[in-house]
Amino acid sequence: MSTIAFIGLGIMGGPMAVHLVNAGHTVTGYNRTPEKAKPLAAAGGRVAESIAGAVPGAEVVALMVPDSSDVQDVLTGDDGVFAHAAPGTLIIDFSSIRPDVTRELAAEASRRGLRYLDAPVSGGEAGARNAALSIMVGGDGDAFEAARPIFDAVGKTVVHVGPSGSGQTVKAANQLIVAANIEALAEAVVFLRAYGVDLEAALDVLGGGLAGSAVLAQKRANMLTHSFEPGFRVELHHKDMGIVTSAAREAGVVLPLGALVAQLVASANATGDGGLDHSALLRGVERLSGTA
Ligand code: NAP
Image 1 (cartoon, rainbow, N blue to C red):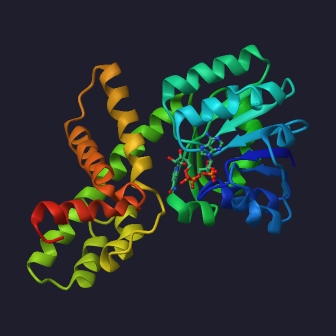
Image 2 (cartoon, rainbow, N blue to C red):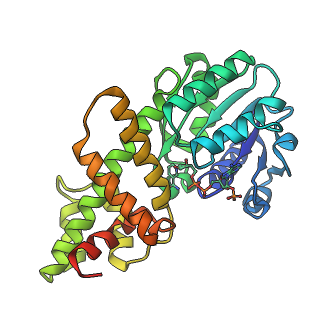
């Protein structure tokens, strides 16, 4: 069992930190807005008022914050993780950020005698609540083995995909696939509604065939009831589509569908849907079809 500092107790980090406590680890959480640390405290975790209050003495520092700049702030800030972590500490970044930024941070961690894994996750809020996340891990193989008990406490499918940054690259591909899936499902829903088809029956039968998907299973209720409380916010998916399209450009590969879906996610964000669940791409299709 490990002593863990967990930074970022939002939609994903909150339930993940609770699972770590329930698995027997000693967890000290820190969240910028203290209110969100309540579930961790109720589960028996300790709550710190700053990074400096959480990190000293931790064998593992886990992060779950939104974007590349947030991870940079948390790690490299004057009073950040790098300033307080003892040599040998293992940093696990569960956030979804740019692979190139990850590689830079991992190199800086190594210069400071720290170990670093990128471990972005997939499975949504439900995956975090049910400890059923898919975790794609980049970094050193020994560090991966050391972190296994932590991954097993929050995830179901845990795979070491390669050296530092690889987890983030796989996550970028994940987000391309998920956005394209949601957009296709949203377009199918608008199409079916236009023909007055029984939507529940249609989604039942589609879900049993080749059109079935985790996206259909997890997002059908949002689309049927037109309720888009996050979940995974459109603004975060907009960030991720920026990551995948710019990484593809750097690699010299072409993602025509990804580019189009990135624009549709950007439109959802620009038209005020950034705070909604990404299943709200349905609203964009409805706007385009004049059925909003
Ligand atoms: P969230 O609910 O917004 O939580 C993010 C947490 O990070 C918040 O508690 C926030 O604190 C904290 N934070 C933000 N910026 C910070 C900073 N600069 N310094 C310190 N703390 C900061 O987001 P989330 O949905 O959990 O997503 C977190 C990461 O997981 C993202 O990279 C996202 O892409 C990824 N992800 C999300 C899902 C999902 O379904 N939600 C699924 C897979 C992966 P405050 O409370 O003060 O705002």
